Length: 256
Figure 1 (cartoon, rainbow, N blue to C red):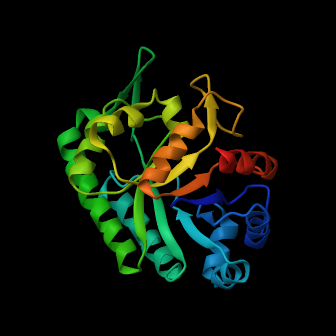
Figure 2: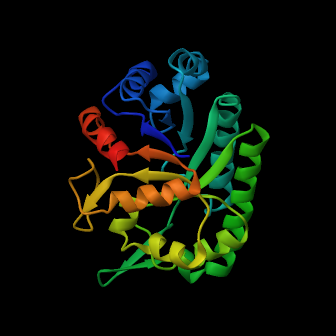
């Protein structure tokens, strides 16, 4: 059975305001976000677990957007240190941590994007797998599952990345709007590999350039993705980014 949640919102300044809305909408959880300072402060001050208990909600956690675990050692070590810090703080109430799969440095030549990680793939993939295993181990030490999310500029070479990560047993988060902007790369990969998705980020999208739209404002077949989420028993974040969009999207999604 899926669990339905909402993202931490930019328009609020307190975790409790997010939880009040989640409770009002009949949701199961909130996805906290380390990119927001008010998330980090609340975790550091021990405020979140009592609030989740008060409202009867669960929580997942979105790691830093820009955390590139395929980068060079000094960068990765810094992010793994932050992961260690917040996974420890989230022990006992964070169910899952979501990290981005970053396409890495880009060189634009005559208007075309060229990816350094693609050119140096053999070195890159060994480094990425080793670092993701470290990250997964950190999460596991604190009773937290880790999932890897596609971004909205997924390059075609990441088909190779997904196959290698799948073969290493990693778990994934499927952001359907990001994938629409990227030409449905992950959807096509999943048709071949049947990726293990423990989390979905569901929002509408259109024109291959707009996503995080309220459900019904774009072209995505949301019912199809809901069925896929149900087949995986996943956490589903309705990842629209403002309260009014959530208020319109939650009942629509539940009715599908």
